[in-house]
Length: 199
Image 1 (spheres, rainbow, N blue to C red):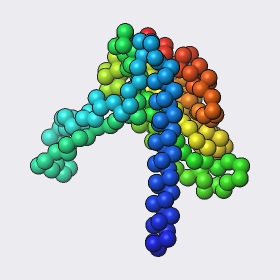
Image 2: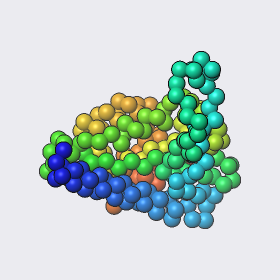
Image 3: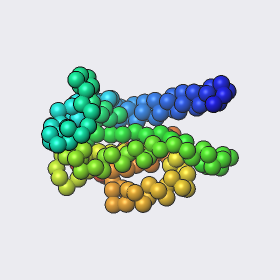
């Protein structure tokens, strides 16, 4: 790979990181303001899940077949983008805010590269959902997370088709925030779907 290719990749990654940070800030700012004077609060980068994989006890027959370092990793878990707490009910829902480019007018198909939406799939895994429900005091009949997706991916036909199939039946916990100039729809979605999870 040439130096120009490396610089181009680095610039693309830096640009993506800056846009992702901006997307997270947008979400946090909206709900920090909306929750003022209520029983709800939003926390950025909640730390209570950052050690969830460390104390897993594997059977001896598995341990005998894998590499087990003498010194375990210092932190082995996950840190969601946000947590929304109901201070009265002591319930918490975890939020992932993903931003990704997409193929829209004026662009090229390669603009749709990326897998931010695919990385949300871990939230559907039964073992992780069990932990999220326990940590968030969330009942078994609802999903313990909310995914908010921003950027041109929300208008990219291929990616919208994928998400429509993947998240079928879970629309209350997935929100495609297409118009960042207005907060009405995302607040409406919170009130109609997510707030009920926290009551």
